[in-house]
Image (cartoon, rainbow, N blue to C red; front, side):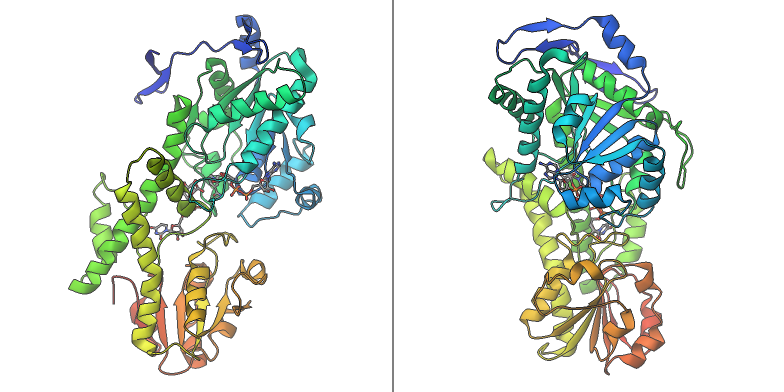
Length: 505
Ligand code: NAD
Ligand code: UGA
């Protein structure tokens, strides 16, 4: 296929030359073309009927943002309780500003919630798949949720046959291994065949998501880029029209608007779009592991990793973001996505040496917390230790693969009594994620009687601790291991608490 240039001035974007208007009858294999006029008419339409499958961190944010920019959105989930809550305006996750945006869009009638996948798939112009793709036992991505959705979409489309006046654009927003676009197509067609009808009208697109938890609305409305992969030109055009208000930054900005600049729209083939997502996450995780490796060497030679990161980061080729040293990366995505990419490489008999090293460094960072505590307290048995922060990063309640849980388990294993505080995630952590972990709702309650404290999550509430009060409540000699280099070592020491950071002090 020939490549051609496209789009935004100053930016070289390549796109495969694709036919765009092909409709295929999966049963008979017949291929026919849709009229150009019909396609053109739809492209001019500004408002689309959008379905979003999965009302989690990504699905809910996507649904709310697409609704905010003017589309009619139905967000659906198989979890009936979650859908019932959303209908009542209760948001199942903590994400800043999301509740307000969902409430605004719902009250204007542009955002609905349901459990009826078939109905949504039959009516929608565009259907996003934003379901979970967790890490399987063998380290690969578990695609069972994606599979269930794709098969149901095939069955739903088969029931209406060729009654649609345009193909359903099925957009994969879940993070999935290379080749999943074709896998989704196959499952849609298999689902349709099960219903005895092969004439299903759909096009598959990969649209990887780059939002960060804690700043998800900002990242979705003001993205660095939008990436689309498909072999169908028509589907890419539909997606461009869907995202136009974001690409041109013409929507009413509900939060923190940044200067209006055109957002790069990158179109590519399916496999490359899927690979961009894994490569981006793996690079960011590796960047953090790199600075963590440097931080360990800083400790050995007596350098300060904060100054080193600052001096490195001002080089534009390096960039200053994601150079914060500490206990390392966790969360619902970096660990599983790096693991999935390593697993993909191994499928092709390639040893992903750099990714293996990034993971090894990350595992070391957690162990270094324990080592620092042991150096100060000697035995941890019978010592009360406060964990300040549980969420894998500030501004989220997400505890999936949170470093806090690993650290709590290790401390528990060594016989310490662990008491944890988090301004938002404490409630979620009450569910017994780590046996013997005591969870409290006040940082000073966690610190009371503790010999040591570990800063696990750099929440504002943790940064703003009253250190004098903390020192007065802790057992002497008190020690603080700052897993995020978030506190001022001088101030901690001035309060009478020993300070141990990462690559500093
Ligand atoms: P999540 O677990 O918060 O939400 C997934 C939702 O999908 C759940 O509510 C679940 O009930 C629903 N679901 C699962 N199977 C379903 C089915 N068959 N029918 C209907 N609903 C179904 O997951 P998430 O964090 O939103 O992540 C979704 C995907 O996006 C993952 O692939 C993830 O890697 C990717 N991603 C996540 C983030 C993030 O910050 N969380 C960022 C970028 C990409
Ligand atoms: C990350 C990516 O940043 C998003 O672009 C991506 O969409 C998302 O994963 C995903 O695929 O789910 P997220 O996991 O929400 O987003 O959070 P990050 O801000 O990237 O932080 C990840 C982890 O790295 C956290 O545990 C954080 O504490 C840690 N981190 C981050 C550091 O240890 N040092 C840093 O300098 C930055």
